[in-house]
Length: 248
Image 1: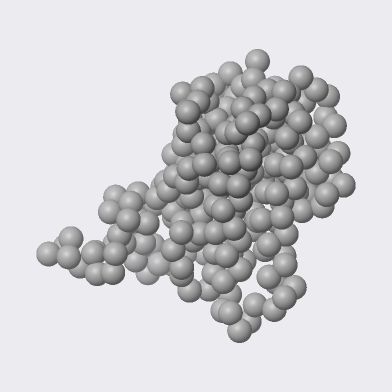
Image 2 (image 1 turned 180 degrees about the vertical axis):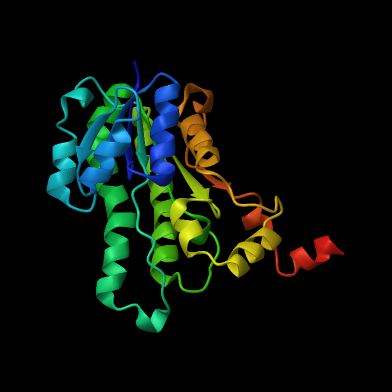
């Protein structure tokens, strides 16, 4: 049985990915720093192993990799853990900047580095979750967007260096996704604006992002590495004024 490790697995895209891996017959290790939420989420995933850890803390990352379930190797690492903290540049002090970077970028580096021996044993794949905000700039995302752009570059570095060990590395950049958090904070005006800007005229679902992630971890993607896949309904491909032109 293949083993996948998913960070930020207590909710949202991470949980959807863990659920889909389990449905596809994988053993899933679910990692999150929110212990109560993780315990509840893992109870609904067949044979899941839940580990409470913060991916931004090196000692905790190292402890994750000692889990007995990883003794025979790791076949997929999904670096999904992240924080979405938005604000104007002038109001983003260094502490706020570091909070975003330490989880979104440092965490991806630390988890991937620590997992290399297990991934080498399993000839596994890394899938890093960035964001459309790493591909195109937007207001209020100076820390978030920069961290996700860093994840994209880090993915390419991993692909180039780790390919010799049979380890593939790819990046998924979700566009607007209909998560509980997004729906709680997006006003109707924001929702309408996103629908207008996205060629498919809707938000994506957590399951749709999970489908892309599990594909890149599978043998069907065995010759794909170093790539960035925007799963965004065409949002990244659009240009200025296109919604109005389409309506015309």
